[in-house]
Length: 164
Image (cartoon, rainbow, N blue to C red; front, side, top):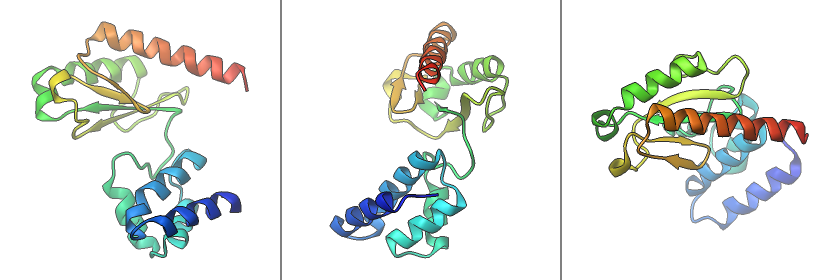
C-alpha cells in the first residue's frame, strides 16, 4: 500500500517539473524505494501521479536498469560489463560474485541480501573493473577487494537488522 502522503509529495514534484515525463524516473525511484521494487501496484500509482498510461510507465521502467520490476535483495550489486570493464577483467569479478553469492546474474542470494545484476556501463571506465552497490561505486576491483566489500556490506546489513 502506497501512502497518500507519498503520492501527494510525488504529485507536487511532478507539478514542479517542466513535463511529467521529466519527473518519471524520480517518481519510479521513490516508489521503488518505498516498496523495495516497482511492483504492479507502484506502476499503477506512478501512472496516476504522472498522468501517463500504465503501459507508458512500464516502457520507461523496463528501459532503466536501476528500476526493478521484480523483487530484489536488500542490496543490488551492479557489475559493469562494458567493453572497458570487460578488458580489465570484469568476467573474473562476475564469476567470483556468482560463486560467492551462489547465484546466476539476475538472481538473489538465498539469504535475500544480494541481487547480482550485470549492467552496460557505470560511467567509471578509467577505474575498471567496476561495480556499484546502492549508490556506492567501487573501481579497480580484485577478488580480494570484492571479498572485503561483501564482508562490509554483510556487517552493515547485520547491524541494520539488529537495530530494527
